[in-house]
Image (cartoon, rainbow, N blue to C red):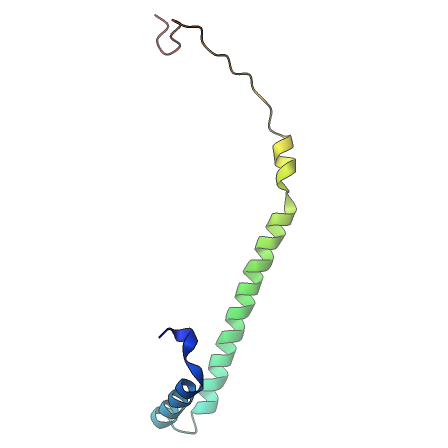
Length: 86
């Protein structure tokens, strides 16, 4: 059973366990802290996604390909050894 497949009964069981461990006075404080942490995590991931999208828009691939200069390759003649010219 993965974490994503908890279901309603699992959530109720977790909430009852939290209520027993922390008591009713601490649960709102814990909920606020969890919500704040989740919001900060979402904001950070959204910021990273936006940065990646902006970086992809800055310089398209076709402009980088246009700057590449072609070179000529010369095939050596048979018997000609380019590694050891002696």
